[in-house]
Image (cartoon, rainbow, N blue to C red; front, side, top):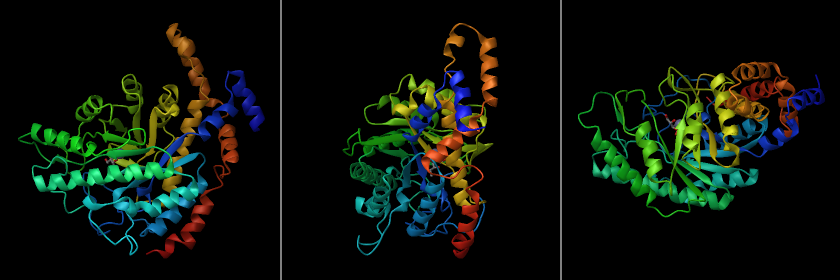
Length: 418
Ligand code: RNT
Ligand code: ZN
């Protein structure tokens, strides 16, 4: 079937596929730099363990070890993915060199340590999001913003404030808002004696970070909640209730962030999107794939990814109400392939959502029989042709055409890295 034939089929159910393609082309999705090097970064010993309740498993060869390698890998990924990309950096990806005075600790980071990333984005016309890194560092005691130790807490507050300044710099340089996400793995392995103290300290620490001056139109601080992490099974300071309430109480300077790996396994973020958008003008998402826990597997084109994207589109998320970012890290397979599959799948799910008719009138009329029939029949519509056309217009390979490039890069570049 040709694109013209597929387009006619969608036109028959009231869908303009050209308009859907044009809409998707303009919607930024953040590409997380940390899939390329197993969340190690450049500011501490790369062989230290990942802490804070997150873990990468696998040792597939070829992880990026330097900024140059990571940037080269990102360029390849972006050349294989359609759509508007935004970079997403963590503070631990600071680039230190002789010109900027060399290494400093996280509480002393400055915009100059991200100039090379800003140049990278400028050359490619990308926006950029940012994250303070409250994990995998000797100053985690193991708590950070919730620590009872004033010196620890001060260090991490100063890190957060430095990150606000860096985010403002990034937003101003690139002319696009910078979403700055606050996530810590603060929590306990076993039943705490005091659940309140850490939360009060966490709240005060975030208050102190957000007291750093910034323009809320340029810097979008987020608080990301979590249910539990490996090694912190009993109690998480930044729980769902804590984070949502924090964001609700500070709507003038912060937005909530939901990561779909951070809830009990029968909870779905797709359903939470409209719940939050009924109250918040803007929310942020980390799109991932949990298997039994927050395992951060590569995003597939599965039912929940499609449902999340359907809600994003249906709730006006593409009009600035939902900031979309990928967040996963698989070290057991080719990392370029992992990045590319996940990014393309989010694009596919968004495109599917954009060519889904709005059946709310059937729902409102109580016409559940017809609604089920139509929703089921959509599943065999010729989506593949619309996706191919989108890839063609974006100048990127179609399905079946890109993996050979990744294999060649593995042979030529990645295999030389160990
Ligand atoms: C961890 C959170 C957090 C991190 C990144 C690296 O559970 O999802 O967002 O994955 O900041
Ligand atoms: Zn996340």
